[in-house]
Length: 327
DNA sequence: AAAAGGAACAACCGCACTGTG
DNA sequence: ACACAGTGCGGTTGTTCCTTT
Image (cartoon, rainbow, N blue to C red; front, top):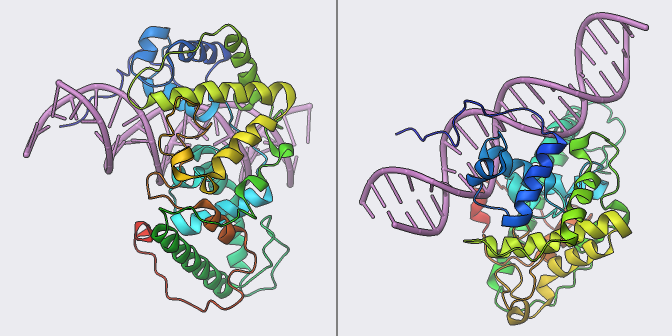
């Protein structure tokens, strides 16, 4: 009945990863691509659980990850998405391509939850100064009301989106998600200088082996796309560490503006194929792929629309029993 | 300067889901 | 239909760092 552990616990190392271990893992992935994690410890000699290897890669070593320094807009986005989706961190992370679900989850638990709580606690007293999300101090009632309105708006937008999913929308991502991913916000040396959180270290690691690496063969299953992702991601990491972040931004833009592309031309998130490289974060950032093609810009518009909740949309009873019913 | 407490973050654990034979 | 392997995901814990006393 019980599932066997992913690895026998004897001799399995736990705790923080060392640079050497990271290097071993990265080197292995260079040759074989991500995936088939069970074979990773055996083939690399890492005394780590396969799961641990996967986690280490996806959360920290994978190129293109931005860590720390959440911007106000990111905060706001997370708060909105959390209200909409609940604690579905992976789904939320898909709207912040540079962020991992783990990172967002941690940030929520350590920062945002407190801020919101504080906000709510201020409901009856004189509201103290603002949250980092730039919300005006509002009472709990107002907050809930606003939240519900937001949810309603999102729901409506998504419904509309789904109903017209087949045709390209002319919605302009005026407030494109990309807009908050500004070059200045892209990975720089993190303020926290611990090894694990310093993406530059990883980038350097990757730089070295990318130069002489031949194109890794696509391995298996769906890692065809993920392999492409790696290729591109590594390139992105390269550019991040060396010359800034323009290419990363471009990657984001090409990805996030997918709704403006012709359906057959790009295929957006779902298997563009055509031999060309897929989007950097295709694997992670596919807002519509698992829940239908939701034109991102509608969500964006909602997410960044400061006027939401102030106007015509009234109070709606919105107990969101099942978030999936949104879709 | 040292200790205590809290905050932040990295990593682990266990369940759920999916694909395959 | 079933069992199993592989992977994804969210909750939780452990450790480290920082701030306060």
